[in-house]
Image (cartoon, rainbow over all chains, first blue to last red; front, side, top):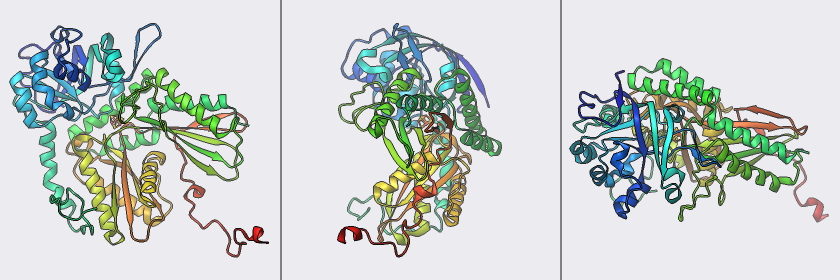
Length: 219
Length: 323
Ligand code: SF4
């Protein structure tokens, strides 16, 4: 396995030669943000609680298992990414506004998304591993620097600003040309798919998906 | 008499254990898969998971930040006497859920389906789910908690008797592919299959098969046990591994539960218990002692009701009244 440690905020050239499937560990600042944040700043046009560029350029699609202690400090347990495909419609605008260049999440997006939104903005997608490596990632967080919009968005959707060290592992899911690791792997697996069903009789009634015609009778 | 404060202590402790400590049966199942996986990426993922479980235990933090939907299964001995009765027991379990959410912490995952209101404690309308089962000739209660994650990995289909084993295999493959891509099901999973019953029964027993039977457990019915083994092989032969990468680590075990069903149908459900297969059990004895374990032992012979429960020639119900 190729492994790379990357300093945040990302500087020009830091992504050179980074190949799909490389294991990455991060040092610096990352902040969480997902639909709650995107809706407020992009759809509703609210002023961000803090200029995004001052937080660096790594956005984590995540909601931590966290609670607020009585003295106002935070108890951050595990952190795990959430599925990113739901956020694609906000991304071009988001990159423009935030200057973000690293998106960390679960499940990746499509090569189409990478080419449309990521490549023009010099951004890449890092996937968490497993995906349940919450404890490992939790250990990589040195401290919570700040939380924004906790009241407005709740624990899961709030913007957590995190100081991280040797934070990972993540896998490089999209490269500078917009190739996707998941799609590359999927293409290999697909070669065998038809063969898996060989010799197995079709059920009496189909479902939508097995037929594309809505006028067919299905269960 | 089993006291509520003892039930509360046990209910809280199993929440903590479930969230932090991966059950040994699942861990050794995955370790075995690491040894057999030939694909470098897939092996890297499995190794990272093993390391993650070690870190969770060392740091006493949740293994996955998506702490799932915490819920309880209660099996009560027929002779068990509970302080305040079953209503008090439920109140204790609801309180333990809220307290565990704050103390461990768990992620407050439970929201109203429409308003999305979140009480930040994993308690709400019909949440946590609490299911019951009973056991003859004993006076303990077993409390199991399961924190099953995943919006993905579950599907249901009405098959028909003529669809046969082929239909079962096809639908199993469908679900593996549907949720295996990009690893949405966080496989390798313990796959639970519910066959038969009413539609809701098919869903419930499939989920219980995934969450309440341990890796390595086989159905006592030889025919079903053989099908379980065959489906494990089929799943691991797809060519897919963790995260939807090329590999062969897809199904760490497969459990099938059946229920008598409508003569015209064969409903089937499939459930995947993920890389954070979290379950923990406490047996609370009548003497107030608590013993912890990870095998729920939910599907006892009595639970499966495999026989017809009365002797031939027993007096008909209502006979006494008629006299
Ligand atoms: S499916 Fe399981 S391992 Fe994956 S994110 Fe959800 S709880 Fe964690």
